[in-house]
Amino acid sequence: MIKGIGIDLVDKSRIKDIYSKHGIRFENKILSLKELKELSERNDSNKISYLSNNFACKEACSKVLGKGFSKGVQFKDIEVLRNSSGGPFINLNGEASVIANDLKINNIHVSITDSKETSIAFVIGESL
Image (cartoon, rainbow, N blue to C red; front, top):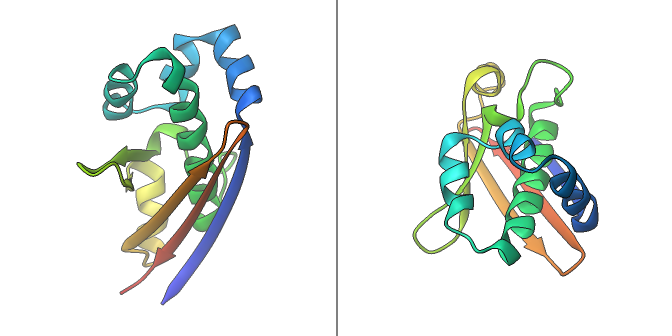
């Protein structure tokens, strides 16, 4: 049963501006240690796409949880990683995990698409 859905659209120019201004501080604010490792494995031209795609996923997932980032969920609580084939998946930690358990969400589906200008993420929270 679907418990929540979320979608988010991010302008890559916005992420590029933030990253240009704050650099590693921005990385450390929104990315988990595993995400930072994935980011470090990308060349500079792909870093903005990675940051933008992950940001969109985190925002979409926060909508699935119905809380957003102003209600106790931290960016690092939502971890967006890639499997060996490059497909995205989400791990929840901290307050995001607690909320998902309360909502009986035990499966999360994520899809990301991007263009030169934007990143879009769609997330579904499901109980089996």
